[in-house]
Image (cartoon, rainbow, N blue to C red; front, side, top):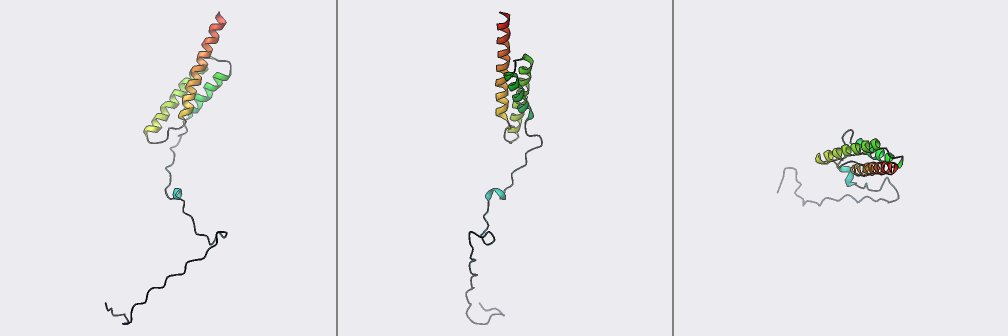
Length: 127
């Protein structure tokens, strides 16, 4: 096809640019590596998503188990851990990872064990 600016000569193939030379030891000439994790940002965790009830329940239950078992401390640990389990379930329902669910489960188990140990010790004292 003839255009007003054509010379009538056959078209010359376009010259390719020479491939750049690079050295793997020089970071300035090395080609950049793409990290697929950087291209898609992760959603930010909501404020207060640490599940403090689970951590507090586990800590109180552990203290109740390691120290001289006291009934009320074990019960407080169980209640806090159950609140932590409820919050972990709410996170899961919202599509977020259930934060510190294992701590809450361990807190319930330790709180129950501390309460049972208190009952056994009271039974042995009364005998």
